Image 1 (cartoon, rainbow, N blue to C red):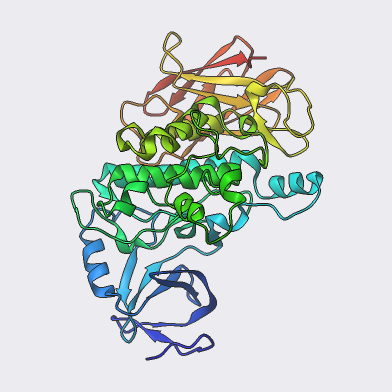
Image 2: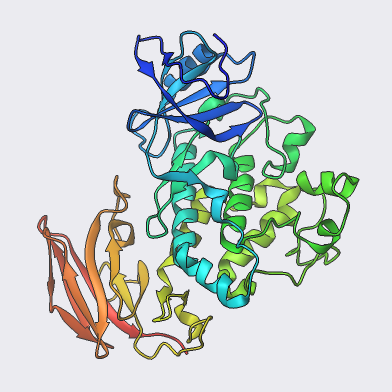
Length: 426
């Protein structure tokens, strides 16, 4: 069965179900194209000639991923074409859709940045992607071909859902066979025909999250590469991570002053250090790269230290003022979450007059919760006090605390935690 670009013929899967494609494809690459269908929550991937959909589904179904909701799992093969049907979620677009702003005045770029979710949403998307990859690694798997094209995110600028598609190369970490790779997002060692590893996944994760946060590719957007002709050897070398990045602390030959925003507005010192390590010594030594789990922690920690200004821009509380309009954060404080009044804080959450959600991931629990994002408490600042509104299965006494004060947060199971309000550092 030939599939023309304007065909509306239904496709039939191996189980006899009909699927009508919606065009154009939402994602296309060297391995095939992904289409939405008229059915809610169902997508179809049509492989390039020679693709073996049945083999892909058989291998993927052997992997321990049946309980994961953050991946577009294959359901069935197509009967007359090389391809498969997958679980989908409507209202999602490729991660790179809003990576760079349209050209315009600085004020227009600020408006675009705010409308697309600002720093906080970009940190949330990056952290959730790191969670997905860390979860796969914890199951002894490697994703292999991570890029901005195969990460789907919520289209709405207020949501931060993440789904991985293109599971064609998902495999056990013990599998030493070679696979495809995507230049620009692949680890350097993969170009030397070495098998993919969790460390090569971590490298790709760092590339994708850095580009999501800053708007720029760390190698291709340095001045040395940017000013080179499209087909030049330096461009090819940059796509393979074989030139210095523009944040390399030891080699400034590819540095640039062209940033969407200054890097210290976008990245915490800890995040910048992790990215510098990955894109400098980590290019040649996979063992020094931050793991997906480490990036997840750094990204969520950074996310929790952002607050929204009245102008709509999100900045780090530690900066003391909004990065867009310079309004000082006079009404902000930090909420510390501790296992007891004398314990080291397990989480520090920036609060302002806007409502902030505290989730299960913030809690100092002996075992990581299966659902990290269950809501525990809503908090905001009113007249210098943290106002605390717990979820139904939680109680909090007192319901508000001044700077220096504490409250007890208790779950109906008997778990008791201490919340403390502290001033932000100026």
